Length: 100
Image (cartoon, rainbow, N blue to C red; front, top):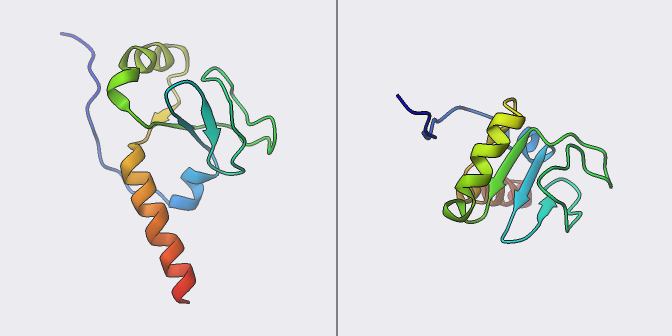
């Protein structure tokens, strides 16, 4: 048997995920909560807002599969979030707030 990543769907509050999410692009990450940029993957907390990173979303997941393997071994408590799902739901939440 081999360990593999498998998508699993679970309900989360978008605001909770956002406040603890590190979004990672090609070379660096951004805190989804305060928008602090140029963060490395090994950062446990945002240096600006001090929130702990419990979730990580990769903009292009295929480019970062080896990094996911390493992170899951080093920090098994971290949950990987689909970036596109997060951005879509975040947009829906913003639209709801505007229409209120």
